[in-house]
Length: 382
Ligand SMILES: Cc1cc2nc3c(=O)[nH]c(=O)nc-3n(C[C@H](O)[C@H](O)[C@H](O)COP(=O)(O)OP(=O)(O)OC[C@H]3O[C@@H](n4cnc5c(N)ncnc54)[C@H](O)[C@@H]3O)c2cc1C
Image (cartoon, rainbow, N blue to C red):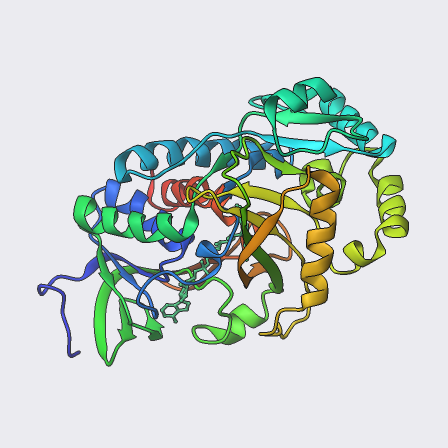
């Protein structure tokens, strides 16, 4: 063994500095554990900095997962205060331009709300008072929810890492690709490190550590296209916006009786959107940039190339739900996450003292702080 950490093993070594790895490091360090994080890049560069930065409880199914999202939100609010993050509770509006979309929203508010929802249906005038950006022409109504928050992920993830290191004594090993993990020891950067417990949080990398186990776990990669744009004049977005296509996307609405007929209508009226898994979310980072997405490509070998045609579909459907914005596209990118075969995540336990946590799909920002707190409490006691 060539490297020891001050002669002492870590209580917990974490592989991966995405939001899951950092959330776990945060809770473990708060419990007094001596934590090391090993990340192959020089900074977080995975899905956790490529997203909308939305903490989106409203998308989670009513019940334990919605409660987990609310727990996560409470942790985000504490962490934001401690680390100096720009976390804004903007809320969200689901805009309905079709009768069938309105029916789904009515069903949701009548039958599917659970403890902690802060939702209500709002009329066109109220939408106009809440948002300068939503298109009011043709609008039937909307669902307002007050639980959604906005964070600027590309700034937030490095800032959380700085806080963990300076404030909670978490040691980050950047540019350390972990090439092997065995009980009590991991290999990275040509050296070995001892740790009593090791948790691998590899995001969408199913090929490096425990490849057979991860590839056999039924996780499915999903590739998303995203854009950022500057509006011609500085504009406050207010609540994050989405519309009918989003009702097909999030599990929260799955049990609404009118959803199957809405799906059929959208497949007929917006075939290019449903074919590419496009649903539109509009959020705003602290810079004032609008963050626009997204598409969902389920090819098991995600292409590195963005499709201009898919970006055009995204922008066309965005224009259907906003006032004319005169946007200047500033950046385009893609991100990949892995969907679990079932449940809200995938948790594997390949060896004594070794775990893998991944597969939060499109809800990693929303669930990770709650999920890792719960996992630590269940695994090591309250
Ligand atoms: C475009 C897009 C938009 C999204 N929008 C939202 C949203 O608004 N709200 C929301 O809740 N969720 C959203 N998500 C989902 C969310 O971003 C992900 O669920 C979450 O970021 C996954 O976090 P992670 O830590 O598992 O993965 P990542 O952020 O990908 O982190 C994994 C890290 O592990 C490192 N790593 C892997 N293997 C090794 C190794 N062997 N050695 C060292 N390092 C290693 C990688 O380099 C990487 O930094 C979105 C996702 C995408 C792609």
